[in-house]
Length: 248
Image (cartoon, rainbow, N blue to C red; front, side, top):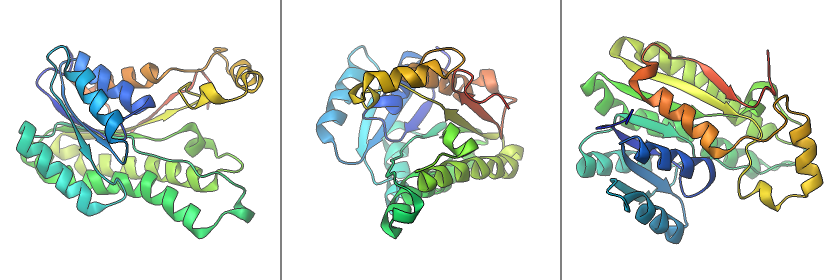
């Protein structure tokens, strides 16, 4: 029970990596406030699942790109659960195309939901964490943010921005015992990848040193570690969960 007594906010938790993080946090004793943007049905189902065995969890509809929503979210979580000890900035989208075909709207939407969301929620939770002189913030980036990818200029820029943001927050808040780290997942197999051509997916697996795709639980396990006191001397770091895809 590495997170017993802790209160965590996990954004974008209705499926995939975010859902796995919420599940693992409940298993480790945390109370979880998770956000969703539009799928109320999926959020309700997740809330029932997380609370089925006595866990404490509540879903909140929130637009990650909105500072107003972020401030309201933090206030509602504090009112409901008492405080916020952990923030997992996981909300994100893709809208891929070559740069020459990319519209301004495609660029803005991805930057706002992926990168500005980290600013919004981190800033909104600061007063609570500063008062407690404690906190762990984990930002979900991507290996694409580390090395780039053709056809994903907007996504790569948003995920690379998260890395610089993470380091800056760590430097600013370390003296207050607030830590900030980033996770850069590689090829993680989710409901979305299950719909792709099997031969294409197998080709991706074969190119990875560990010869397999990762699972959402692989990312969630690292989130548990970074959110817990076991990582109390780790801040400002980017940890890749990629099966060896990036080795430098």
